Length: 113
Image 1 (tube, rainbow, N blue to C red):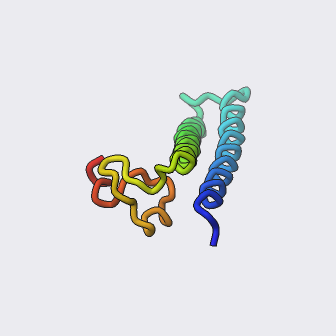
Image 2 (cartoon, rainbow, N blue to C red):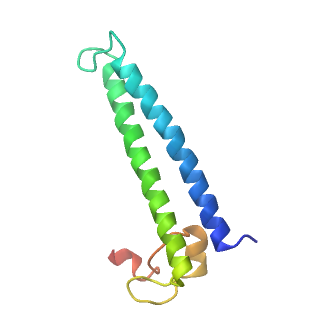
Image 3 (spheres, rainbow, N blue to C red):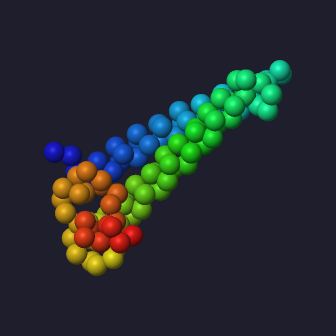
């Protein structure tokens, strides 16, 4: 079975690949929107381009935030605090960490966030 560090590095790698793909998608959409003859306000396809740009931007923000949460989990691991609830200090359950390795709270404290 993989170590938690390996699991976190895998999560980070997948999120980094997602960021790269979304950056390409966002760039393609921005290029399409700036192409001659494209007018977001009056072009029937314009609303679609604007929507797709906003969707890509939101997904990109989420992927970057996930990388930040993985990096924070790796820091907690290095500091010896990984797997401890940041609110109550009790251990975070193994099942929760297996499902969400970046979790910072136990199941009891999670709804209070």
